[in-house]
Length: 483
Ligand SMILES: [Co+2]
Image (cartoon, rainbow, N blue to C red):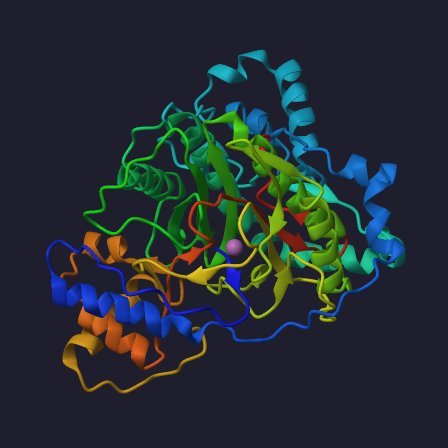
């Protein structure tokens, strides 16, 4: 999910089609307008000379090598009993590389172990809970990148290693959420085809997440609505019930979905396009996100990351319909820190230069997400709203309207402070809730998160990973063999 900075403009009052409920349509639009709340923090536009640290660091061999995918998750999925055998091996057991090594060893030691129960393979389409594929209960580690420069000492610090031992149960929870994300997106990449209704794409994805993660109230499940924004819509669009949009061959779709275990959220997104003309646009945001991940680190200034991201992004050109565009970073969209049950935990990771001095800190989760565009490089709120989220910091608010009070109880029970969409309310049996939802938005209890749109006719790509700044190293939690 994207973080918006700077005030966005109210949506145009174009006609909305909401199953003939005209009154509701008006309300819906009202909610979108109210959503202007968004962080109105003004960013300084001071142009800053690129320091050697940012511009050159990405090119050192060390940086290039750590960027390589470990690509071993696959092995862990197919034959996982090896992981179980390694359980007591301290932190070494969790390395994906070690898991693969262990797999080999196990095979040698006991060739018949494949036949034993406990060795499960994922089905196609995936239907087996990820927890059953890892009987040891240890889920694969993400990609590890070492800190650099002033933080090299962390790699071997005994004190920092001890800190990690204490945090290990939490790592394992977020890694489980990441494994679900990888398996679901792997399937979705081959399932998604032109001609599919957007609602079907979302429901297929969401039902698969629910099954693989063993959805359990607020303890395990979907972290936010499935974003499947098309073309010039950059983020925060998912179909509402009754939407008839069908995916087209020439569409550029951003698939942005989230999983969580015990509130530990994996926020990860990629772009789907069938027409190869968009390949450079997709590559631009993917490489820009890799750059952001490489530059991230403890005590690194967020502004320096933004500058590096922009430089990578804007080194790409894409030709569409005989016109060549230099890909732009969307300057009012950002990555963000993530906290337990809090998708936007307070810090923004810019994707353009601008001098933000705030630093990343040890023990923080970040969604590094970048958006490349053929438009103006600026988004505004538009279209009918689908995404909503209870504000993280509002305490108990006494409500007079019984309907609003009842809806809030439903939100508290089912989503708490995790983002949800109208379809999620529909599927749990809520009806005629738009008025009450608007009331909750008006009181600041719930935030509306309307679609974020570039100029009509433009194309936007997105790439996003969740990283964790461990005491000794950086872990790219959501990394897979796809990206
Ligand atoms: Co995000």
